[in-house]
Length: 191
Image 1 (cartoon, helix red, strand yellow):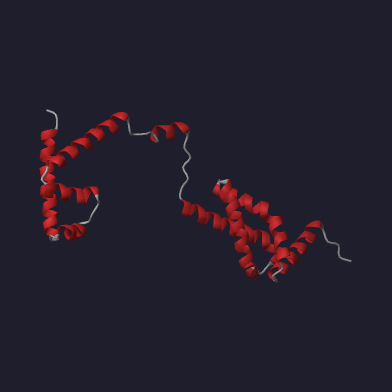
Image 2 (cartoon, rainbow, N blue to C red):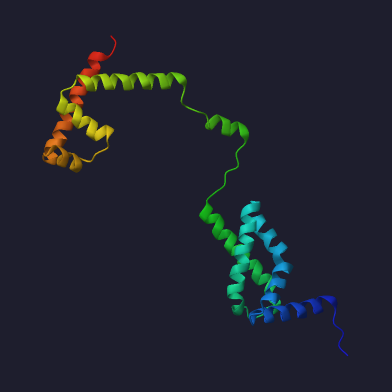
């Protein structure tokens, strides 16, 4: 009479469950998932250091294991095989994600400050008003050329069609209109 120890019985039972899952028994595979889910999650969490990602990876590992279980030659090695899948997938995920930098609150506050101030906003509005005034003092063709390009975002080709002029002429008009606007803005600027 052969007496089996508890660990030997567990190995025999595990191998039988794995073989059953390899033959397509979904219930057997579900029992394997229940048995090893905690261990897979622990490996994933240790590698990824993020609960949500570890949970997501745990699901992905079991999907991968279900697809590849037929390739496992030694059913009693299921736990180690599953651990190697988990480790490989966690490493791949961590590499795709890039480095996670832990930052303390003081560092974040020092680097993530709002650079805009009410003064900067006021100066921007004043400058925009000066540009509008300068545009108003330009000749009609210069103003239309600048507005088509900068305000309406038209390309040189679109402007060429709109103004019925070659692209080279449009480029020259833009260049000349910019210089004229700069002169107008100099005249408008307070001394």
